[in-house]
Amino acid sequence: MTTPTASSTSYEIRPSSNPRTVTERAEVLADLKFGTVFTDHMAHATWTNQEGWHHRRIEAYGPLQLDPASAVLHYAQEVFEGLKAYAHPDGSVWSFRPEANARRFARSAERLALPQLSEEDFLDSVRQLVHTDVEWVPTTPGSSLYLRPFMFASEAFLGVRAAQRVDYLVIASPVGPYFARGITPVHIWVSEDYTRAAPGGTGAAKCGGNYAASLLPQADAAARGFDQILFLDPSGENIEELGGMNVVVIHADGSASTPRLTGSILEGVTRSSILTLLAEDGRTVTERDIPLAELVDGVRSGEVTEIFACGTAAVVTPIGRLAGTDFDVTVGDGEAGQVTRDVHATLTGIQYGTREDTHGWLTRLV
Ligand SMILES: *Cc1c(COP(=O)(O)O)cnc(C)c1O
Image (cartoon, rainbow, N blue to C red; front, side):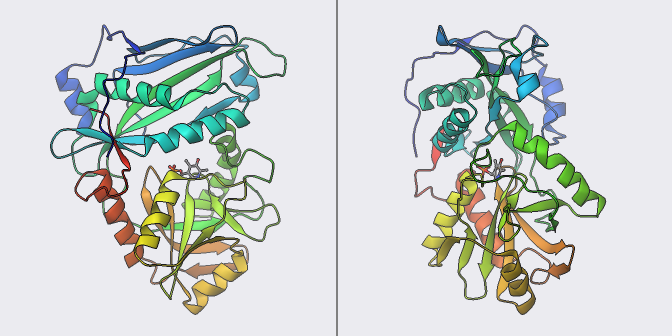
């Protein structure tokens, strides 16, 4: 565990003149939906090529004024992160491996030709925002405060080059448990018409453009009656990941495998944490190419016993059914398997402070 240091407040706190009342907040916290309500404040900093990062502030949450020529609106120069703040039974508030998010944010920014924000600056923005809006961290079981740091090109300029003015913000949204009615499996459509990323592209960066490109394939899967889409690599041979979650396969001998990071897969913090936990559990964990044909055969023969998707929002999501143009298979009995359930219990136990954090994965925010 990392406890807070008496860090210098680089973010100037400018309290909102119009925060929600205690009653209004209680009403919101009693009926949580993902990503629809936001806290009273946001963190905000500005970068220019002349001044670097400056004007760090925690200010009232509210609309931004953007010039219509702002580069992000035309060329999608934007990156983001997603992490959560968890209330512990003793009232303290923690986040899970935020330094990993900070480092990934820096890698994403580099790929999108955006300026580097230091790990310290990233953590400070998150800490100051959560500190300011601590009353918004929900305490009902399985709920959390979802944090969305993001950075975008705000320079008003239509030429094609890296912007010389950039804004960085963190907004926060209280969210309820992902699985309100128990861990329910999803049905996955494997896309043969679309790919998500290619070698040398932006697949390993967490950027809005990747998501924009995944919306049509996702809608296509939904129209066929499926919950989510699984993307293949550009050769159409190996599985990669879902639109916003990585994939892990559990085999009958107890081993686990996951697609190796080829540069076109987003390296999830949840993925890496789960691989660590599975290995500590005595399982053989392999990062390799996983051909779709091998996976489908394995599900049919029973060699593959569980498949789950993983990411910060849901932690793990069991995959109960996998289908494409010429196959349709049920994984195991179509329900959440034991390994999936155990991983979910262990990881959420650490995040919510009910299991020992032996890896030093938690950072105290408040
Ligand atoms: C964010 C994201 C993930 C999951 O990453 P976590 O750090 O585990 O939340 C996986 N795939 C994509 C494409 C993502 O954007």
